[in-house]
Length: 164
Image 1 (cartoon, rainbow, N blue to C red):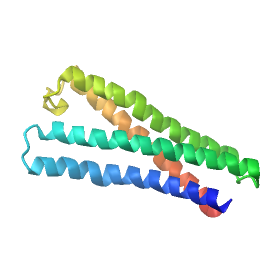
Image 2 (image 1 turned 60 degrees about the horizontal axis):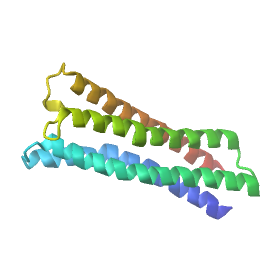
Image 3 (image 1 turned 90 degrees about the horizontal axis):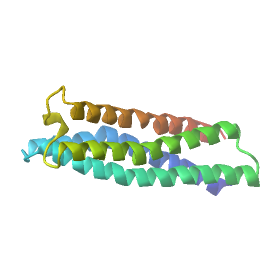
């Protein structure tokens, strides 16, 4: 059981830590460095780099979510059942569902809007009233907001694990 709890805590830490590192460190650093280097189409390049980083991190988050769910279920079957098992399972399922939605649905919608805008044009270079820029901004906001589900859920699960 100790191994399963360790795997759960590790998966939660990787997931939460990755989200924090991406949002607070990687994204701002990528956009700042590319802008400072005066790279042509800097925002377009920075967005492409961060988009690929995020795509790869989605794969990590899917693995973390699956590991957490499998660990919880295995612990429940083998016993003793984790305290507040149903709540933990619900939180972990919501976390994984949010990541899957972000990685599969929102990311493909963002890619579609970017394709409509064109490979050589940054959404931020379009007029503020352009429907494509507005759609991109809305989708970007949704993508950012939905990452709060695994972030907050991960903190909740970590607190449960620390109390066991």
